[in-house]
Amino acid sequence: MPEVRELERLPRMRVRTISLLVLAALAGMLMMARTSLADGGIRVIIEGREAKFGTSPVVDRGSTLVPFRALFEELGLSVEWIKETRTIIGRGGGVTIELQLDRKTAVINGATVELDSPPRAMDGSAYVPLRFVGEATGRAVNWNGAARTITIGPAPSGQQADFDFEAFYRRFLDAGNAEDIGAIRSMIHPESPLNGAEWDSLTESFRIYDTAIELGQFEVLQAGGSSALLRTVETNVNTNGLFYPDNRVKQLVHVLQDKNGQWKIYDIERLETEYLVSEEALKADADIDGALRRKLLDAVAAHIGALEAEDFDGVVGAFDPSAPEFLLTRLSLRAMFFYYDRDYELEHANVIQATDAEAFVYAVHTVETIEGPEDGAFEDGRYGSVYHLKKQADGDWKIYEIITLSTEPLK
Image (cartoon, rainbow, N blue to C red; front, side, top):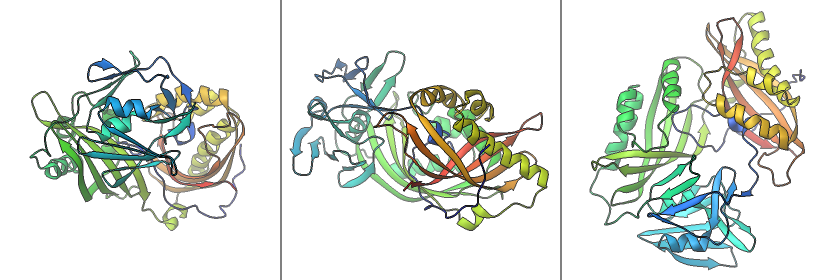
């Protein structure tokens, strides 16, 4: 079991992530190995016809990349390439998109947004993220995993819709504050990728927390026809006394009309999360029984130890079966262990809070890649995370979620 040492210094309390209504993702440590691989099996359908890019799409860090010139022309955008700055610009339909090779930010009509995967130069061509470009033009983008097909809908028509998007989105947040799942679901588009297991996780979050959401900033980046793209800044604060990493998030919200012409939320992309919890709150030791403290710290240390030992059963067994990312963890672990040899070391751990059923442990660990693909998806670093554990029927404590609050590159 890894040695627990005193924390020398706490990294900056800031992290970028993607999420919707699920409090955190376990995939920060356990994501599938995401090296860039050409995937000739992916088809792209734009407005009912199959797009031909000359070369196969490339999957990078979970995003599909395609040659930019062919994609822009398929979407009706003019193409401009600035060689000196390696900048790609597309214009058309009232939108201007600017991307730069190897940069994880883009600009839509002057507004800077984060990218999951940056544009890249490969085989003499510049590849750009397909979903991002499609949605930036106001189109709906769908992924059919069974058919391995990406479908991009028609471009929006007309001028900005005569619709109060801010009032609409405030109603959505009000439903969240009221913990009214029925009202929330009624505002989600029937074809949204948000429909699915997220509802169980949301129900559990409502059971545990009483979170107040406040809309700080709202902007309509683009709207026309049956599609709109919104940008929001929201603050989430828990009010029931249970530990929660209060946060401020920046998000892109894609809104579509359904078949009845009603506006619905199609997708929400979290661009940036800034955690507001103080260093003192994280490092404060809970006043709890010593035996319970040892059990909780051992559960976290055992998890890190299982990762170090590449013990699949040990890592999976450390999680509550109802954890939001339990299935993803199972799927991703074998790939990670196959492609990588990584060294994990637990530097610090303390119990923040514990009740009869819930517990929160703050831990800092380092990860260093010993062997693996040179352009691997995993970054070596020091991670500060909150482990949310749940007490099981047999009295054991298992991890329900891991909220990564901070990262710091290893020197």
